[in-house]
Image (cartoon, rainbow, N blue to C red; front, side, top):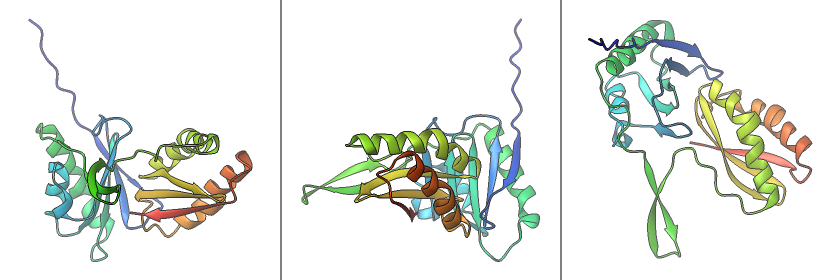
Length: 207
């Protein structure tokens, strides 16, 4: 008789460059590969039961989910050493009990033809490139930059390219991070300018 062995859930915490955010990494996939979702309040957590539960904790300010990790941003009223163990155990027990992580990815409304509003999924999808240069930019972001940004508990996506200026969107730990400007200019901008001569500057929108 076969015995089904349940693999234990392991959660470990990693600090991020943002002192207000901590990354909690699981030994399993939490969100479909390539997708991300960010929640800045409990009111936004429709379709994300784990985020709704986390917002019941008084010190949780934002929740970001991607692949196998959850990045949590805290309020300034507590220190990480006082809450990290609690958060790690909370996430581990929640997953171990078989609770759902995300049932529906968040959407936003975007105008279409100035009259009709269409629902669009807002997880990590680059804006579709329309030129060869934009294709190169997205390829560079995917191959060289996004893995490093996810390693720091955040995400980066291509937004637009106009007159030499690349606009990207930063989420998770990268949003509001004091060092994100340095990373953007010294790392991302330098790489894109070196590899793609048409790029003159990189700017970021944070969410």
